[in-house]
Image (cartoon, rainbow, N blue to C red; front, side, top):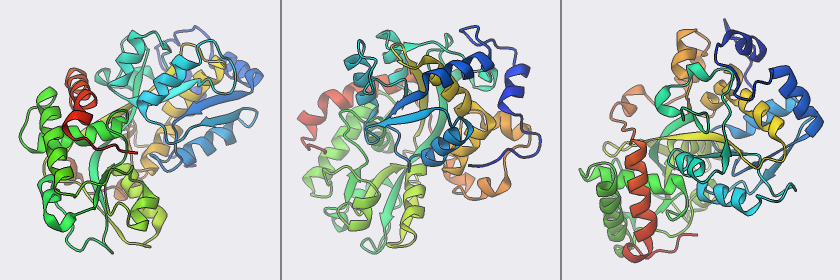
Length: 368
């Protein structure tokens, strides 16, 4: 795990210096004591190769060795996480998640259903207002853009844009990294494809994206398999539509065997914010709060950057000079992100509704 450098604040110091009060009125010391007494934190849908989560989890364990992390279903999607809370409302056992990490559109949905409990981390003021719920129900933690991870052993002409994926040379090659009926990442992939056609963000891009994948499927280019590092390396999915941080992590994991090229497309560059929240039925509420404090500390935020994600507190940390240049240099050139679009919550909700409701009837590919 990365250590703090320069003028980085310790978690305790940050807690004392930030004016925003923790919504529960507990001190950090009280939260830590309560968490140690609980002795466990249950997470869900946190694959270790996603956004540097492996190192982030290891960093939390090192800092709080008295707390065991119970990791549920690492490959689950955002919809699955909400369902895990619903299914375990009256269950305080090991299948009940304490915390969730979901796509931005799922935050308001979870709040509306009463599935999450408000909690404002001590560094609340440094999180952009556009990326957090005013009541503290959910808050952005990191973001990335959709990219293509390409196995260049099998794909000699690397696609540069979405329209290229429709070419005959990419038969049986293109996969999403999730089920677009449930996975936020896959929904964003369809939305981004729609935006690349010139459609407006929201329902229009959702409709256009469905038509794009219908064509991709009819041409035989779409592979209805959830793409990941293993399928990419094995050749089952030579091109995977992935968040850039997942693609770059996957490339590093494979260590050139096979060689992987990560491409940010020329159009339809869509940025997606993922948010954190605490279950309203969390069996270990203090451990959940302590987990949030760690994720939003400088140390936790640098963990995301190490995993090729853009931490939500990036601007605040850059201003204070606590981001190592080596981490910045490891990311794709800044120019690749210049056309990035951040769909509003309303646009995301509209696209999500369109895509999840009509994928089966329009595209008809059972992704699994």
